[in-house]
Image (cartoon, rainbow, N blue to C red; front, side, top):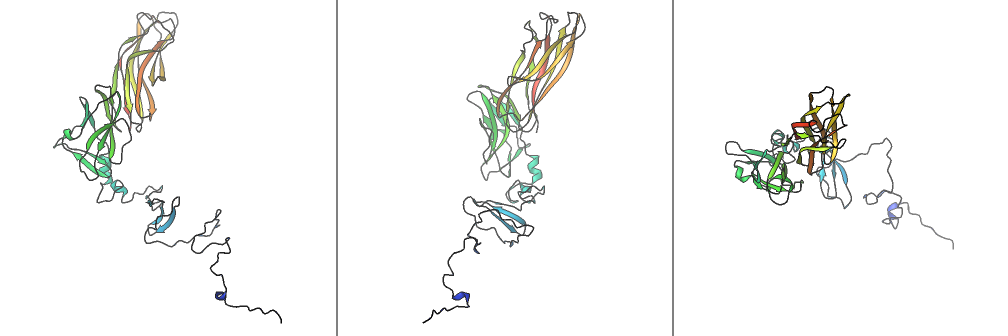
Length: 348
């Protein structure tokens, strides 16, 4: 008796059709991940436009997909960004409707033009407190957390400072649904989701010495007193008071000074005296005053500035220093830095 083999011409009659015997192939349900980069050459990949966002992917996974507005992405936390490349999270300069309202919906936000108008809030010193000078006739407004908040009474927007000396960061603080705001102060310059940094102050342990509005010109300033160059030549000496100021860690700073230098020439050749701008114990800028004539004192005016950039958040110091270069200057009577100013400018 010979071997009998039955061949079925119908694929559906085969057994084991549900087995996954060929792991090198793509599965139709998309459950087998690629193990290397997929190169489609110059061929387009067709994607079906979705009517709604897909379900959130598993941890560490992201999804890219198309809707009528363009290309979107959703991360493993369910956060959707898009349309990409058209102002909804891409690099395009186009502003979307939510951008017009500070990132909120039009019913729960403020228009972009209004937001920009009230991006800064002027703080002032009131003894040991920082406050907003507001009244019913002149309410003060600030945009915080996508909404415009206003106060019409300075007593509702006052924060009292206390504790050890150091930097204090003034915050406009709001609740989720409030239309007004209060002021708080903190040693940390990072606002929470319901805060906006509106001012910076230096607290010396007993009083506020200086304050400024973030993004605006500051009023950190001292008078540099008249100081005589001593016989210690070639060494910088402090001229006047040290200026203590605070950086918000966000806004670039510029330090400026304006001084009049007087020196008396007494030797046979021209002599120099120098003055410098010192910030955080480092000489940042230096200039020479060259004395040519004798015996009368010669005076020269200088404006010395240093672009500090964004200094680290916290307290910094600045001072004017001067020195004599050699013995041609009569140190007992001349070589003065006459009264001038040293100040900090915050540049938005």
